[in-house]
Amino acid sequence: METQTKLFWLELVGGILGWVWILASVAALYFLVMSVFSDSPWSRFFWAFGTGVIAKWLAKGFRDNQIRVGFIAELMAKGFSQEEATKEWFQRYMGNKT
Image (cartoon, rainbow, N blue to C red; front, side, top):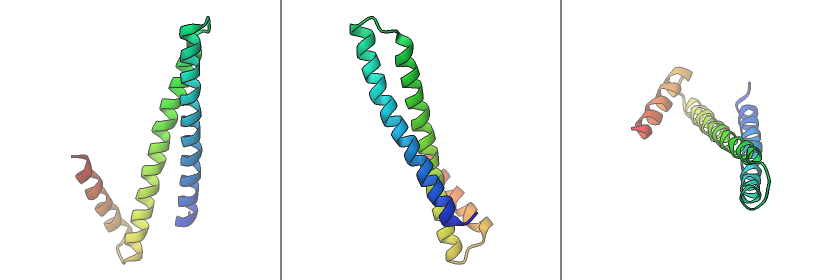
């Protein structure tokens, strides 16, 4: 797949998941208030909260992957091979984690 196309799809899916996270968070707050002050079931809150957590996790993963693809494409444009660019990304990624 072409790099620009891959970056486009990662951005699109990450953005959609970001909006799902925002909407699920607002819905979770609403269902929390309704469960505490009304006779609404708690399951709605837990479903909305769980959806928000999963959407946030996936959106972050897509964003990280988008950054990785862009970084590797930039290094390859500078003359690195695919393997060298991947190793450089891995070294920088692991360097930030520790």
